[in-house]
Structures are given as C-alpha cells and as structure tokens.
Image: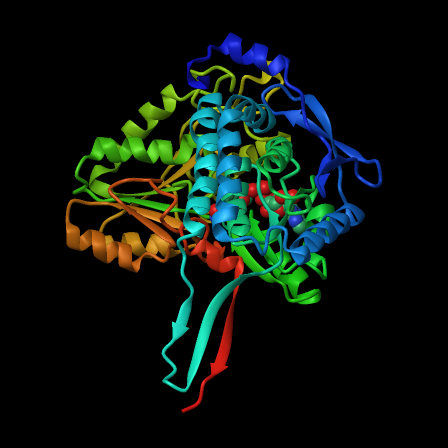
Length: 500
Ligand code: NAD
C-alpha cells in the first residue's frame, strides 16, 4: 500500500507519471478551443510539471451544453437512485484503486506532504462519493398534511447543470464534497479546479467515465478564475454554482448570478477561526498540541485553521511554550518524503502573501516568537517555517484577515465572555473551538460563538455525516451530510386534487 512507500519509491513513481492536461468535455479529453495552455508548477521545486489547457468562454460553453444535453436526455438524471448508486460506488472504488497515483498528483501539484494526500485527501474523497452513493436510494420524499381533499407530493428534483468552482488547498477533497451530492441527486456537472491544482480533477474525469457515468454528465474545465471561473458564473444555462474559495471571489459569484440568470449560489468561504483555551481545559498539553496542528497542518492552508489562539492569560505562557515546541519539530520538508509533516506553500504568490503578512504583524507591534522565515530556498520550492505571534491585539490585520499560511496569532483573555467577544469579532464565522472541563461553560460558549462548526475539547474533528460551512462572510449552504443535497435539488410540490 502507498503508506508503506519510501521516499525513493515515491520519487521513482513520480518520475514515471503521465499527466492528463486537457479539458474533459462530453466524455473526451480536448485542448482548449484557443489552443492556450498554462504552466502547472511543482511548488516543492518551482519547476514545471506540465502545461494544462487554459479554458475560456468557448470551452465552458461547450461543457455546459454537453452537461445540459445529458441532463435533458435523462441518461443520468432520470436513472433510479439505486442505479446511480451502483455507478458512483464503482467510481469511488476506482479512486481507491488509483490512490497512489492520485496522491502523487496532489502532492506534486500543490506541495502537501504525501503522507497527507495518501492517507487523508484521496481516501476521504473516495469515502465522500461512496457515502452519497449509499445515501441516495434511502432518501424519501414527502407528502404534505393538506387535508383529505388533496394530496401534495413534495419531491426533490435535480437542478440541472451544476458548476463547481473549487480551491487548491484540498483539490480533490473539496471537489468531492460537491461531486458526491451533486451527482448522486442526478445533476450534470462542470467542475473548474483551481489553476494551481488541476491534475487530480482531470485524472478522475476518465475514472468517472470508466465507472459508467455517461458522457456529458461530468466535465472538467481547467483554467483561470477570471476566465473559466467567470464564464461558468455568468453562463445563462448553469443552474447552480457550488463554490469553495475566498470570500472575495465568493462575492463575485453573487454578482455574476445577479447579472446573468439568478442561478443558485452556495459559498464555502474563508475563516479566521478562534481556538479558545480556558484555564480549566481537561488537558492543557493536549489542547496546545491540537492548537499547533490546527494551524500548521496543510501548511496552514486550511479554511478552518485555528489561526487565532485565544487563551486564558493565567495559562498562556504554558500553552504557548507547548505550541512552539510542536512547531519547532514541524519543520517543512520534501513533500515526497513520507516523514514530512509540512510541505511547501502552493505557489510563489502565496509564499509572498504569507511573508508579507508576517512583516505586517511585526510592524503592527505583535511579538514574533517563532519562525517567520522562508526556508529550503535552495530547492527552488516555496517553504515557510511554522510561525507564532504573541501579544496580538484582535484589531490587528494578522488577527482579522485570512493569511492562509502557517501563522498563528495569540491573543489572551481574562474571562469567558471576553473570549467569546474576541472570537466573534471578525467578518468570518466558519469554525471555532473551546477547551474547558466545565460543561456549562462549554455549551454556553458553543452557543454564543457565531460559527458553522464549534468543537469542544478537540480541533478540526469531523465526519462526512456532519455538515460543514459558515456563518457571516464564511458563506452559506453546507457541504457534507444529507443537508448538502438541498443545494443541488429544487423542491417541487405536485398538488393532486381529489375532492370530497
Ligand atoms: P480563490 O477564491 O482565489 O479561488 C477559488 C476558485 O475560484 C479557484 O478555482 C479560482 O480559479 C476561482 N476564481 C478566482 N477568481 C475568480 C473570479 N474572478 N471569477 C471566478 N472564479 C474565480 O481561493 P483559493 O486561493 O483557491 O483558496 C483559498 C480560499 O478557499 C481560502 O479563502 C479558504 O478559506 C477557502 N476555502 C474554504 C473552504 C470551506 O469549506 N469553507 C474550504 C477550502 C478553502
């Protein structure tokens, strides 16, 4: 199994990889109509892996037309849940069968450690698709309690053509959170992966076809946000956009919808999640360790990263010492080394964005107590060491803005109400955590925190059955769980008059 491979074995497999680098439209790989391509760069080395089709209006339009034609023919949309389940289960199985290759593509494309892509990203992507496959033939519709003279059948119908636009931090997993419920409910899809990380999406397109998903039902259009992403957002025949990415771009999709066909939009956006550690946490060391992983995991490129450590003053020094001890051990390394727990930032832009924020933090007067530097520059890759700021004021930019890198802002508090106030004081509301052994304090804090997910005495735990998504400018609509199916279906009431 992939988990047991050595660094040399991963490297030799990487050397033999073939890349799918064309769009996948109506069951075929095709070049962009313009013939344009863009560089796909390995962030661990700065070298080009391949050149990928740069899709634009014409390609997106072809993909949407193929998706609509498949939807209207009913080759997928009108099949029973049990039939779709069978195909999607095979699709999930094929992802598992190609896990080693897909994990490699993910790591080479976006710089995350191979141990994460092979043990987390790819298996969870397959598991997500499998979960929706298994759910879809067990979901019932409703009959309204109208009275004896009529029957109102309340049915959920697929929307039609779903455009999914996803980010680069968990490329296949974020796509799978859309693919699972959108395809299970009978829609056709056009997926636009992030320009930094298109390779796994392109590869699974043919696995979807091999599993039996009919041509036109699942299309992938790689390209830039301003071109391919915007074309999808403004297309008059796309029924819904399922977006994951920054709040800034999320707002563009609302505008695109308003200026085109009022398509449904669901937004899974960023966060500045507060991780609140009270002095009476059941285990302060465990809380500190989780706080460190909560910000350094995936190089800090996590929407729900615990980027604000809000810690009770009396235990701050102890907690911070432990966080830093974990950080010191977590130095970035070659993503293909199975021992590496922290890889490279996704691209040179992100590298500089994070370094700029570190400079801003210092200028604002926060105290840099760990890291702060680019490292491994000799590799050509984009690595940043785990970075911790102490004495942060919540009004500082490093406490308010999403950095999306391994940078922790530590803020102290004296009483629980103050912690909640600080916790809620950003534009975001994606996730939050509270550590205390006092159940009343835990529940009150969880209730008062404005976030879509609140963890108690843990951080970043989850399950596909539990919804994920944000309050405030972290977006609306939920990924995961049966609730995600609501985003991809429309309610229809069929009123049958019976009479007396
Ligand atoms: P981004 O918003 O820059 O890009 C996301 C996607 O939108 C990409 O596919 C991109 O090509 C596209 N895009 C960019 N500009 C566009 C435009 N003008 N028009 C149309 N499409 C456009 O985000 P990113 O840098 O790829 O990812 C990081 C962001 O994603 C962070 O804010 C992070 O918090 C968020 N995120 C949220 C969740 C969640 O579930 N809430 C999960 C992962 C990441």
